[in-house]
Amino acid sequence: MVAFQALCEISSAGHNAEKALDHLLAESDLSEANKDFARELVNGSTRNQEQIDEHIRRFASAWPLEQLSVVDRSILRLAIYEMLLESKVPVKVAINEAVELAKTFGSDSSSRFVNGVLGAVSTLVSR
Image 1 (cartoon, helix red, strand yellow):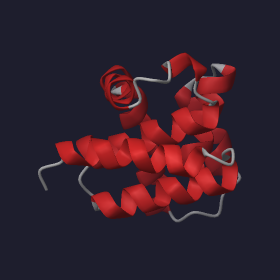
Image 2 (cartoon, helix red, strand yellow; image 1 turned 60 degrees about the horizontal axis):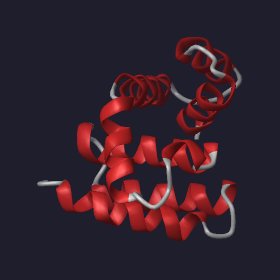
Image 3 (spheres, one colour; image 1 turned 90 degrees about the vertical axis):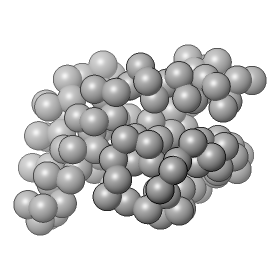
Image 4 (spheres, helix red, strand yellow; image 1 turned 45 degrees about the horizontal axis):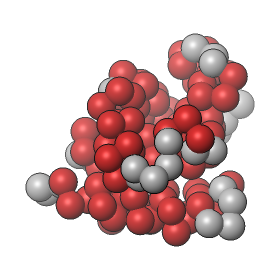
């Protein structure tokens, strides 16, 4: 959740990733291991954003990236990073978590959209 919140803040307000994370982590009650994992997710997602965004453009070609909501875009970036570039979370878990975030924070159609895009992205995963 903290990683998702940080990505939304970075995307919507243009804040620095480290400052956004430091603020959110200071207010959280996460264990040190979970704080480290949140940092890894945010840093990996932002560091690889160009590559991740190419996957979004490819698999959601009817929706210009800039026109996606901050919520949907942040969820997709986080989940695609987990699926393709970070191997700690099983693909199905990454998709399920993303869909739940979309149900909670997105629009009425966000969960179907996120599930469809990530289902297509999952065809690239060889694990």
